[in-house]
Image 1 (cartoon, rainbow, N blue to C red):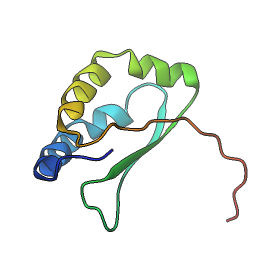
Image 2 (cartoon, rainbow, N blue to C red):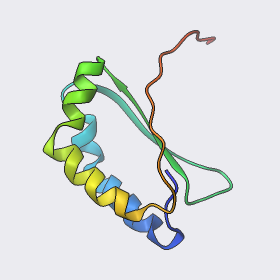
Image 3 (cartoon, rainbow, N blue to C red):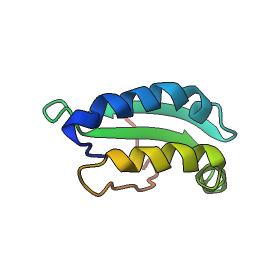
Image 4 (cartoon, helix red, strand yellow):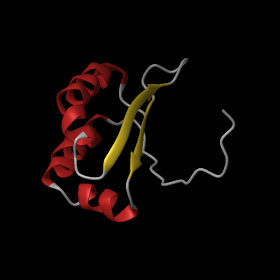
Length: 91
């Protein structure tokens, strides 16, 4: 997600206010927020969900509608979202 430079703190405050609710939403197993090392207005949320159904229930929830409704007003560019699966892990 690429945010307007002057709205980064607004995004961070909103994430801070909602991160526990998102993480504790039924089916969410893991949640991280990452920031680009060189472009401080670019962020990624990384989460693990029990199933696609659980993720879709979150996407249909009032929590998501509220958080995303606000978050999208802060963007400087169109966001990208995708689901992926782990192929291999080397500990």
